[in-house]
Image 1: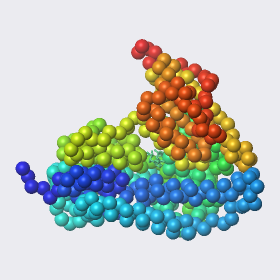
Image 2: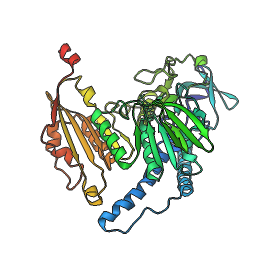
Image 3: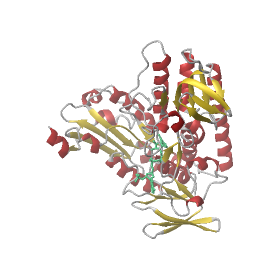
Image 4: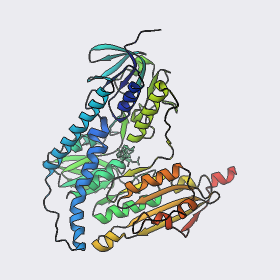
Length: 463
Ligand code: NDP
């Protein structure tokens, strides 16, 4: 048997790679890991964590305004951007330290360097050759603009958004996906004027249609200007400002143009061809359901394999893989379908399971929808409705999808996710006693079918 330096080498110190390395080392494997930038990867450094901090920062002005409806004499005051960034940086540094301590504590050898394949079992890591019996690719992704847009160098992408020297006064957000809708809410909440340009009639393609409509309405009510069915034709400099011309000829002047038009897998320059690892047309590492690449001893997990690009999914994949390769018993299993997810827009939304459009492919659905002004906003006077939607399979009464827009929705949807993973039926929701007074209780008190969604033609034909 060949003598390798490591039993397992992980490329990429983000959420998925670190979890895989730690768990494998805990099972007794000799594990090395390489990270060329900061420990914790996208989520910790330029993703979920700093984004959530900024979302929370953006809420206080609104809360101060809303408090007047409850008798407080409060006003938002002046926001100090530099102070927010300094506090955020301190927290990220703390988390970087936790990641390195967790790795060191579990006996993983850390390499603070870029790793590049030089053969199926060999890598060049910081100028020296390292060999491993098994290798995990967990390099994540990075923001990209494809195809190029004229003047795009005058804008920023999400990696830059966490280090801006000052809060821009006017922002043009390009893209109506997760990042576009989240940062639109952040900048607007902190006091900027925000225009969002997206090429679909509604933001968040792939989400439930009613939820997308409710989001567009809710976001517009908060004062964000929406430009649906538009792309950016060109960006030009006008002194320190930017002139953004849309496909319909409309021109918007802004201080910051933010491109949030998707991310690509980070595989360029990794030497994958030296290792015989196949990629698809988008550069993603091709894997099977068990994260195995075209080489049986090389694995890929998280965003680099471009499946469901969410941090908890990468963590689950990394943990499961380490258990499977090195663990003594059955690996812990995860339900990767359905996966609950939230968009921390303003207002936020969350979802688990199928959209109505997907569900009707399986048969006729009972659709329950509740739309109301929550108690807080009856008092605050803010135009901010909550929307809740449940999709129930008519034949089996199984709950196929739950979608919600409104305050606290991300916290709420995690529990609903457990119910759907457990296969809950509408009757299970009905016999659950509500918590009063909450918005969440609406999910267990929905009695009347709002409408019936007939099965889609294709599935009828197949019956
Ligand atoms: P998304 O894929 O979510 O959205 C990209 C947006 O850009 C879409 O509106 C897309 O339009 C648009 N777009 C793409 N290319 C162009 C183009 N050439 N011109 C104009 N518009 C374009 O990507 P994000 O960058 O927002 O986020 C990447 C991923 O990161 C997410 O999908 C998600 O998996 C993850 N993420 C998760 C978060 C969370 O869990 N809260 C937060 C942030 C990111 P169209 O729909 O027409 O393709």
